[in-house]
Every structure is written in C-alpha cells, then in structure tokens.
Length: 261
Image (cartoon, rainbow, N blue to C red):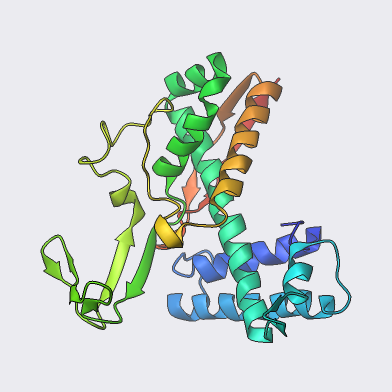
C-alpha cells in the first residue's frame, strides 16, 4: 500500500472505507442497509483516491499512483474517471485479497499442525504451500458477469455450460471455493496439503484474464512464510477467528495470535 502512495493515516482510512465497500452486509460495518453501505464505501473510496491521484499529475512521486496519474495511452492521458477506478482496483485487488490470503494461510497451518511441521522441516515446500494456501483460502469468494450474447462470437455457436444454455442478459456467478475444490480436478480436494502438486487452482483466473497481480501476491505470500518460519519458533492462536459477513471477499476481521522466538 505504501508503494501506491498511502501514508500510515491513509491506511487507516482505507481500512475503514474498504470494509464498507466489500463487507457492507456485515452488521459491524453496515450503515442504512447492505446495498447502501457498499455504495457509500465505494463513493468514499473514489473521493479519497481522487484526492491522492490528481495532485500527482505533473508532480509525480515515487509510487504507482504517480505512474498512473502521468501515464498516457497513444499519447492521451488517462481520464479522471479511469485514474480513480484503476486506483481503487489496485488498492482492493492488491491489498484486501493478499492480506486475507496471508491470514487465512496462517489459520490453515494452525488448524493443520502436521502441515506446519512439514514446512518447518523443509522450506523448499513453501512455494507449493503458497499455491495451496491460495487454493484453500479463496480470498475472493465470487465473481459475477453478465452474458452479452447467446452465442460465442468466434465459433458462432450457442454458449453452454454443463448442459445449461446461457442467454444474453443472464447473470453468471463463479464460486471460487467450489471450483477450487472440484473433486474431478483435485485429489483429496477437501484436504489442505502443502505438498500438493500439480495444483491447477483458478484463484488468479486463466487465459487473457489472468490476474496481473498474481505473481506479486504469491511472492508476498512466499516471503511472509519464509520470514515467519525463520524468525519465530512458534505461532499459536490466542482467540477465536472472526470472519466478515460478505459474499465477495472472504475476510478475517480478527485473528489474534502469539509469536514465540
């Protein structure tokens, strides 16, 4: 988040506003109903992002928002709306999902002590553990899209998924937790296994829509696990984890732990 240009105070603002935007159905963050809370959260995010981005035009800082603010496509600067929406995307996609993958991964390792022991005994397993954590935690729960046509334009054929024909205007929801526990793809799909390989999870999408931030997220997860195992001899939970009530990002609101050296 500091790479994007956030200060310590800004991180606090983002945390409060972000909770409204992605967890509007949670009673702790809700204000005047779930839809109203979500709309308020995104409006506040846009306003705050605008305050961060626009002053960087012509006066860049050493951060990603400055690169956006002064970037051009075919010689044309990005519009104010494009800058704000891209800034929000970088913040939500680059912060909320990764931090919840880290927290969810630590929780999974504490719930499966044999897996934690395997990692401590062989740090070479960390790269595989990262993939399994991503598959297991599913930081983003769902994605929804609206079909723009009855047919696949290239093949000129009807669009069909598992025997169900998709019509123009239909809304389709992808549940990552279900896809990443598909028993026809994964052996022992409901088991957390840091040695799992291959691991063709769909957490970062695939094809032309593969998440650009996927490699960075996995790097952050890998470094976190490496440093955790190197610096501390033990990690233990000191309280019950609390999850947000949300259907978009699977967030751990609170997860108290004790680290021992």
